[in-house]
Length: 136
Image 1 (tube, helix red, strand yellow):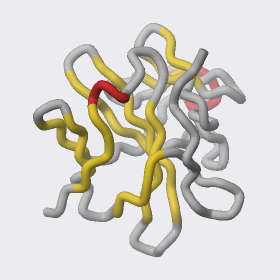
Image 2 (image 1 turned 90 degrees about the vertical axis):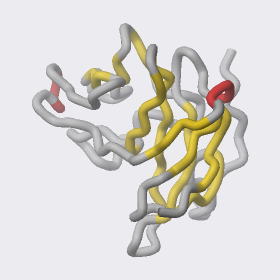
Image 3 (image 1 turned 45 degrees about the vertical axis):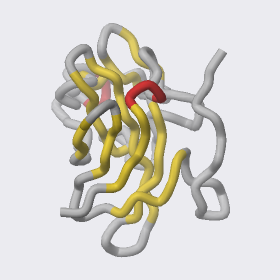
């Protein structure tokens, strides 16, 4: 297993998400969000299960309330730790988990099916953006 450094745990906002881009086995790009949990970090593919073209994090952090990621379009709320949604149009579904490991304050992508491309989301030209993850 080859692990790629994604970010330092200090880079993940306490409320919100850290966005990065990966390459799928078919060559397509996909976005992933890191979520700071009380006892670690979770990684989820950045789309709502109700509408897969609806991103949870649109480039400046997903809305997170009471330990849940909120779909900005329909308001479905996904548990940040388990990915499960029990309300709204996505009720009964679970976010797609991405394998990561946290070692010595660093987050590594350990999912054998994905290749780390870069920080940020996918721009319109298909490349990762270089936007900051700071929000005000």
